Length: 373
Image 1 (cartoon, rainbow, N blue to C red):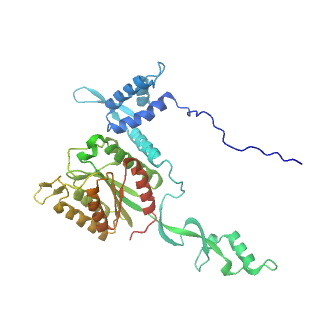
Image 2 (image 1 turned 120 degrees about the vertical axis):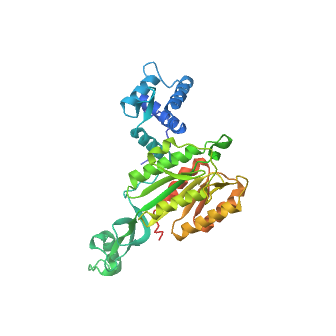
Image 3 (image 1 turned 45 degrees about the horizontal axis):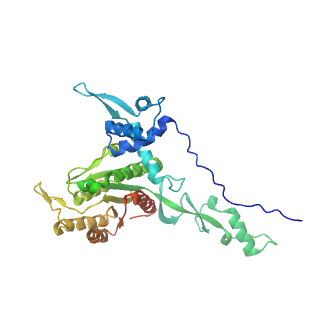
């Protein structure tokens, strides 16, 4: 009898864009614009109107003005009244959350799915977090951890199927890991170099911070994330203020940022602590005991770099690893970063802006499995 073989292959069809309402289509673009303009609503709408004139984003039935009215009706913006009677627009917490979620979807959209909201350590043993791996039964293991099918299989292999026999050596349990919690401080460089040479470096850094904060809030609520910015000085900012973050006419006071980060982490009770530092330049500023600033933007100043190395070593003694994400590839800075990393025994990445989010996510996921001290 002749058999019929079917031809197997791929069927290509024209891509059909998923349906979006006129509001959703504009809202996707608006979230990008409001992030780039650091929360300046009027400037973002001006950009949106220009894009509309060029790419015909709206129709006579749904205009930019209709979109603004929907933003108000949906609770993303609200009217404000100044002291002089002039009006304006405020962004609401609902929009700030939408911006963080948008950043999370863009940067971490392909992250691995997980069922646990806590962090695993690299200490295997008896706990309540299943790993999917098997090991031999040990005295003290809970009976409910015994994998029945694997244990019966071992009994048949070891004793045969003629007369059933099950011994302790046949028993198999599913391995587990202890849970832990993580305290993270994210340092963001806001020195003037973050917008020099026609490259916007602050917006990708800001979006990474928004994505990481939303990831921790939604997936790891028992963890903590503190965000600090550093220029001539260093200070903490609230997660809700991330969309409004801007670069200033500052030098780079890395030591001040590290001091503040370690002060924050000293007060945390979590065993696992870490610092992520996003920067594009060399340290060029220090706070002096008399309240003045020591600044030297020309090359690597040994007085400044030695202070950085000391701070890195101090963090190491406290069990706090520092991961540096250097979003520039200047060769003369690599020696400083390498020595800084060696002093802390941390990590350093020389990364482009497009890779920044993925690297931070991977490092965060990796560190959350470790018992640092």
